[in-house]
Image (tube, rainbow, N blue to C red; front, side, top):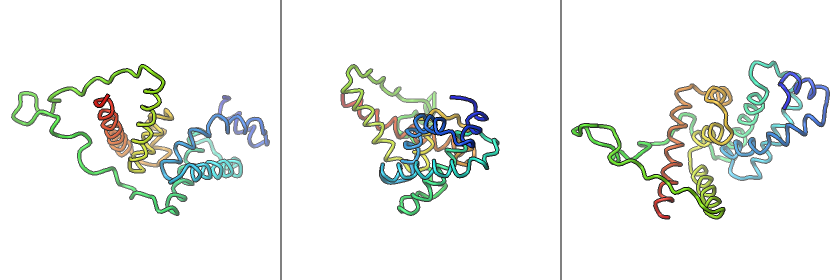
Length: 202
């Protein structure tokens, strides 16, 4: 992929090949991010389509204060939020889940020589040895993600699925670094808990 300045110049010139390249390269990730806010794959596809339309219409206003991809994802998130509100699926902005992220009973108490440490380390998961098990694990991860509150789901999707840095996620979602860390920690703990139960049953 070319640098942002070249991509923007080509988009502004109406270069269809450049647009097609972006569409092919970014749309799957955008679809996963949109699913954090809307109820169906079809709705997420509409969000992605609306986002690309907004990008084409607004490319002349892109000022380069962030990366092009961050700017596109910010449009995506705002579009998805609006659609999610219409679908009555939103979670209040500050919602980060209730209760501890890991069962407190798994840690040593205040009277122990090592308070706050694990009583027993979490079991090591077996490495999936077949395509069937690997596919089932992916399914379990996807199911765990869909059960997360919206804010946690979008943060873990951007960080762990799409590979964005914490700074980029904060910029896209317009949240503080501390809020991003809390949401990501809770999301990872919830997904790990779900997978831990699955692997303990194998």
